[in-house]
Image 1 (cartoon, one colour):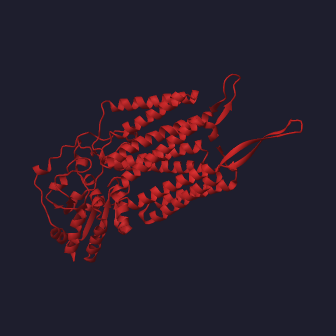
Image 2 (spheres, helix red, strand yellow):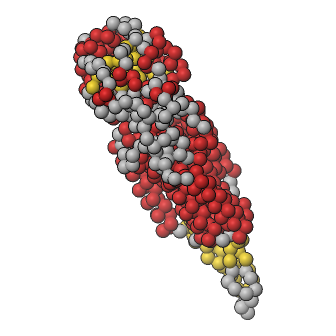
Image 3 (cartoon, one colour):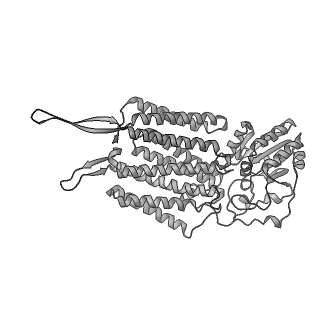
Length: 505
């Protein structure tokens, strides 16, 4: 059995239209106001690409046909009779059906709080798919059309993989394996199966460098000799370095990791697109890879991190939290829903700062209701979003959009940070690390150097937190809790905001 591809200009046109849809999808996803349209364009583009690929890559059985004359002489040879491989078609459709059911059920059941680990899990599947395709191409290169069959004078025929295809194959398996193992570790950290603190191995940078050089060495060997040993060594070492790169990264930096792995998954798909001679995969992979790399770079700038250190892994500052004092050692002020409602009603402007705690409590809808109530009392309401609030890029934007918060009230850090000094109330709901002044002052803190929202500069800070005993995902205490202008509102975020709304009537 082999796959045949129709040489048809309509195929190239279909893939071109799919590529344009993907570009429009990325453009739409750049803003909450156009994100739904962007998602629809992405779905249309993928549907076009999948249907075109299925129609033009029909599995067939090829049977040789030889015609002989009355005396038994060969009249024609080399012709063949082709028939559709029905079993293969059924298997493909069954796989698509199973995947579609899993995707639909997952999408309907997944909570927004679990979205980051779901994204990490999906990245791992993309990486694993790239590895499996590369392995299949290596084991049967003739079926993929990337090899020539050589018939020696002595011995059985063997396949020689094209040199360019060897490069594509080894890149695909290496990037795919790194993406898979790295995404699995990211999933475990985000899902709470592993701690959020960095796990710093002794001599980790030397180990990573050694493994990386070994991958390059065996990859070069595979390109030169097509050696199975070199191919499998690259695969094994790539799985290992993916694990080694992500384990040392702390919880505060996980949004950058998710973005970086997104980029890796795109490049893995692009490499496999070359192996499969599929331009749609090349276009899609290149778009995902480049956009993920650009997003990672932007987020590194937002966190004052080195882009190269992200790629190298282990850019968390230390395994231990910074030198913040324990919560029980310092005095703090506790407030109530009545106090919060009174202070915000008297304010001219309130800036709301959402964080992961809001996502956990699913408080975005009642938070929007509180904002509407405040606007009825003549208060200006704005929302301040940190680039890495939550557990993945855009996490807070998605939650606020889900609650129908007006887009013109949502501002990024660089656009609103200067307003806190002229703001009456900063209302922080479940955000910790992104409002921690230790990022500006404590060089021993794992978040040192990360730009943060200057909520402490507001006249009054209302800080919703479950208890004073917990710390942020980075494992450091927040000095804002103990300032004279801060009032702590200790409760479940959703319940506290509901009580505030009742007192705003």
